Image (cartoon, rainbow, N blue to C red; front, side, top):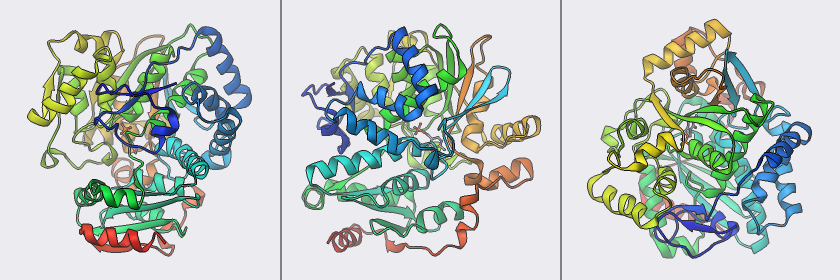
Length: 475
Ligand SMILES: *Cc1c(COP(=O)(O)O)cnc(C)c1O
């Protein structure tokens, strides 16, 4: 399997070449040159594998179609080490829970940081350690976080050989629970940096360091952001696992509703469907930051300014542009790299928007690729959390609530609808209390974490300061 760029660069790369990279050199995103096709027989074999041998075996089957530069025995061992009931809480790893009629929740949030990003990041940690070890190299991951991504990255990389994590976050802006989760890590290779500023200041510092190519090369700076292909690939697996739990026969179809921000999660669903998973619809749920809902209803993709991006009670979906969306548009345009470049490299830079409403591609998004969308507001979120709690005795988090609200608007008779649960309610306790009047349950291992000692360095929003910090801790 070789990988190509969405902007036309076809110089073929293998999985491990792009594992540690971000963007392709032409500014595009990596995708496999074709999607492996899964026939009925394979689907049946995987169904049995998942039920009998478990999630790690299913992950190995799917990953091996995309990875040909890690020996099978090693890849199998990496999957087995990653997807354990110790780390993810249950043997099924991603159990389905029934809500009502044809509506299901797929639990993706029982990993170390209680959000679905663990599903991919835990694998990435093991892949990084493996590949860096094989090359005899080191990597310094530099990132900016307002919550979920940073903690998932730290819990994935803690204690891993050859990797250090330098994670910036805006001082005093994360919830006490999120701060406790990150700052209580005492591992030697994890560095928390609280920046005097907002999230954008953190991101600007990271960009400035990455743009200093000499520094980047000398200190081996890397990232783990959501455009990383390996993260997307890891997410493809749970679409299959959800399908095998909701159906008994391969002739049945299911739909998924995905609380979306950067379009990474639902893009993995698109890839699963392109491989042949029997999916009826992929429903994109957004919050008030409705860049994606706007595209799927009007054909216009318009990125927002930071001033135009709202702070909501489902903060991990507060995006101004959807960084993985280019991958889907590349497929939508018949994998035409020049046209994708004209839209993302040129039009978007120039006008901040592009319009596909008059193109066949826009109809294809719905008719050929099964995409639909909807949006949810703070009031919807509160009502959905309350209703789900009162009628089903189940607490759901704010992002998942956006998904349930939109899923209910897209049900089809006879087709199970699976909403991906992207976080646990304890991470967003304030809104849960607002909706239900009750504190959400706290998993036993998180009791009292706010009182643990914290390891964090406070810093001005200054590029020189972060560079000096990295240099000092790279010895
Ligand atoms: C990251 C995140 C999302 C958005 O996922 P994308 O892959 O960016 O679309 C939704 N919910 C939660 C809780 C998240 O952490």
